[in-house]
Image (cartoon, rainbow, N blue to C red; front, side):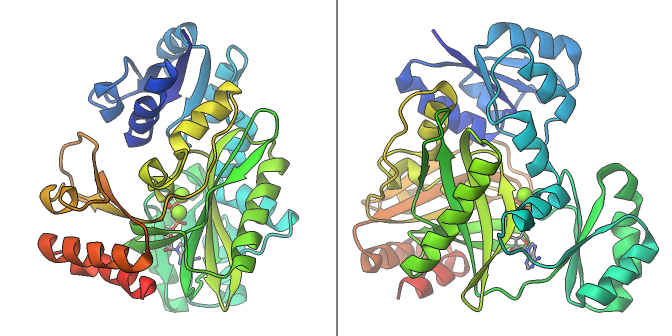
Length: 379
Ligand code: ATP
Ligand code: MG
Ligand code: MG
């Protein structure tokens, strides 16, 4: 019996555990919150990622470790990797934890990126705003997620407010200034690389964010094949450079038909949730196969899918469940503003049928705004 240890017990760990059950896997989750939602399906060790007693217990009970959360302290990942196989490797994790290291690697690999500069002082911020121009975004290098730790600078006069908001964190998490990209669309590549180096990508996904949080995903993205092939080639280059094992997502902006890399998520990704029902093999299943050295599953799509994120509170399940291709995912979390509490996937055989299903669901849930950009894209 193989036990997979997961650092972090959120919905990603929960969906990994659900997906691993048919493979006969056992799971053990490490999280500091005793009520972490993966704990409803897997035993837990409750403790901080730096809590030595918790790490000792976790390591002693697992065969292999992986992550639901990329911000596990590097020392803890290294400590674990000396005792058990850990995938992705602590090195890949370290790069993806730091927006500066990540963007520097993108550049080294000839993957285009928005302009960026490391910011250590208030003076450096003014200098970088002058070089990069406005609008731009000041971000924490580490620990940001769901658009947290970001300040949008519209004019140079906003520098004071940006520094007041994020400057105090400069020493601890580092800061980076990025040019604001007026993109036509946001895309992501969700891909997997096995222990033996085999690489597979799912068809690329288009994503819509509201207030920095993913709201909807459409797969396959309605883009030309050359663009999709370029996006996947970037993902492959990155995976090979990092000797990456497991699933990851590369987030991209598309501006004037050119791709710019935003960030690398070293784990299963929200924009890949549609693969549970929309692909021959889900991202969760393939992540586990990769981590365990099993053959990777086919990443082909089964029709056209849209994923809708539920943020803050779960809506009524009825409208989605009454659709032929409707699927419901309630993460079993309590409601809280801005929190990802669940998602729905709508799957159809054609773009037209998917648009109609989205229209019905949007109307019945009073969420026309959420579905509108997807319906427009499907037209
Ligand atoms: P995630 O939850 O995806 O990990 P995050 O907190 O790491 O989010 P980003 O992905 O950097 O943050 O930013 C969140 C969203 O904000 C992006 O998907 C995009 O919509 C917008 N955004 C971020 N950086 C830029 C940029 N340089 N130009 C334009 N929009 C941006
Ligand atoms: Mg991120
Ligand atoms: Mg992101």
